[in-house]
Image (tube, rainbow, N blue to C red; front, side, top):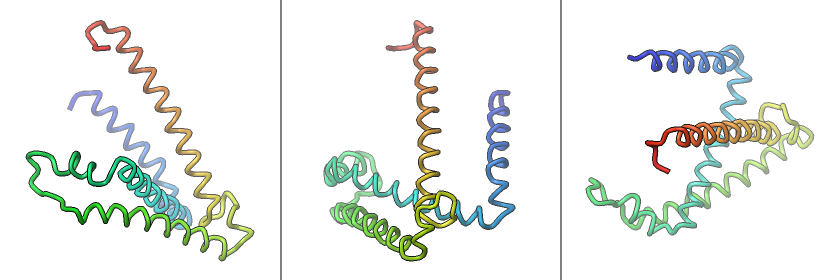
Length: 154
């Protein structure tokens, strides 16, 4: 393994330990993270299903899944499954908001309670801001390297 690979592995491992320790030491933090990122997976699935619906479910299946050389051909049932996923995500989100409201109305929008809308929103906003800043930094870095290296395509 070259040195850069070792450095990256060490950096990644340090980050995993640093960010994982609180969840390992306190069950409440672990439960909160499970709650927040479980909702995140639901939102991610909805966005994927929505994008497929906007593109065209059949067109998506034919262009990206049933490609030449594919071992498995996915039938028209997948089109209905994608529509169902979008509906399920909406129903789950509405159910989740209703349950969060009915458990404790005062704590529903509190930013730091473990199981509520507020904690999900604040953590999502933090991650979106971090990823947006990282994207801007990465884009500038790549553009600067391409601009300084005449061999790179424009």
